[in-house]
Amino acid sequence: MAINIESALVSATRALQGVSDSPRLDAELLLMFVLEVPRSHLFAHPDRELDRRDDARLRSLLERRLKHEPVAYLTGEKEFWSLSLQVTPATLVPRPETERLVEAALTLIQPNANVAVLDLGTGSGAIAIAISSERPQCHIVATDRSASALSVATANAVRHELTNISFQQGDWLEAVAGETFDIIVSNPPYIASDDTALAQLPCEPRSALASGKHGLDAIRRIAADSGRHLVSGGTLLLEHGADQQESVARILAGQNWRNIQCLSDLCGLPRVTRAMWQSPGESEVP
Ligand code: GLN
Image (cartoon, rainbow, N blue to C red; front, top):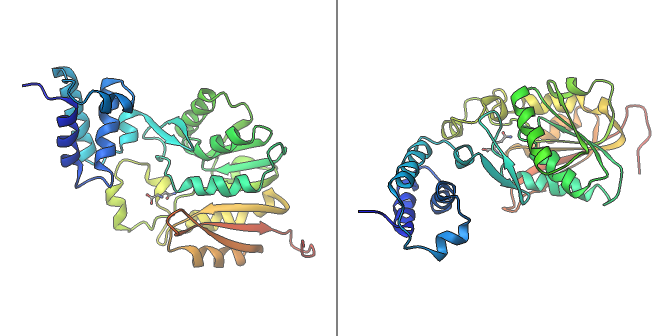
């Protein structure tokens, strides 16, 4: 007997309970993808029956989801900052908490300001694209070590018709030799390499998630090398784990960063640290 939309959602939600924090949402997103319909269609037509092909496609996607493959890889899409982005296994799936980093960057940039922004390790391009969409006058450089990530990011910029981002390949600051910016932002890998949380994230690039014994290797490198690429008084904004606030502040303080301040995300967790660069030898910027 054919299954209808509502029953398919109920049974998919039940199946996903163990692997997902948002089983009903995942079920809806997968069914929307299979049926090629907007969400409103699921609510308007709960009695619509799935044909055998759609039912089979939904089942095969559910099987993959049960092996921890993110919904975004199954559908090829993820919404970030209200923008639909292409994502592939070459890139981290953008997380809602990273929107806090975008928000913090936007508070530093006046709407029509021509500010130079660098996004290190851009992945799908989420941060650079969100900033670009809000501040079209900015000049943004987005980097990644991975050529395949950069091609996803470039496709996302094209999709949203953003022309003020240039993409450059390279390892952290090596991608921008000789260039200087007003603001540097990054969502680097920051999970400790032996953290058991990684077992729940088997599909995303390990290099975008984990960074050494304490998860701080990439942050250390960025803290050490970013100053040379910032104007004096320029700002660095870094996302990090909720338990890394003090370590990040210590690393930054040891590298001549000033005005180090941690910002909380919507859940009240300390997830973004902001610091000001002051060229060594210069007097305090008021
Ligand atoms: N926020 C991600 C997670 O905890 C990790 C992303 C990152 O390491 N930059 O799943």
